[in-house]
Image (cartoon, one colour):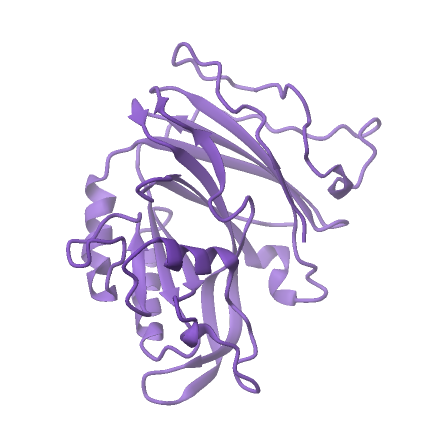
Length: 304
């Protein structure tokens, strides 16, 4: 699988707070043009333009760390899904099958044959200290008072999400547009990151590839196994690497805007139908690389 990313504007030419309506790429860079199924001389690539972003709300990323043999995880997943319903378009959910030991995520034939793990999930539970066991979650990767870490018990998810939804300041805005080509399973992704306040720190943009639904076995807390369990919002890969793409280092000013462009070849849905384009979503978030805090997140449902 190929992942190629190119940052068209590593720092933006912003002196004022004026918004550039249609940025012109200075070069095409290292995008994988083999994924574009047309001759660019006769069918120019349709570069997108971004309109002014009028959003005034900071969204919340809830990362549910789960496992298919973790008997307490379905209960946590129910809480996460209900929060997703309670805060539509504000609470963004990603289910990540990972733990330091990997015991709850292990493939165990003949029953548990799906490998839900990802390099990203394995790295996060290793590098973000304090993980005690599944199920745990992060909420914008804010620090908890109990563990002095980013990990929250599922019993604290509702109150913490509510607090973040209603009080977290808006630091940045994000937009994403994409072009998908079924002929090559290629997707070209274009993002805009706009800082809304003067900010210091190192900020990375990370894009998750989620499968909306994967049907597979799951152990339940009554000792049985549900063979047709609906695994929801499953992290399946990262588009631009585990820790993403550096957008701003040091200081960013209110009104600074950064554009990034990526190409990625999606898994073949003829080999694995769960990768059908209408079962996929992208979760895009901006995080402080040092504290891990997520300062904005959006979700984009893919379609043919």
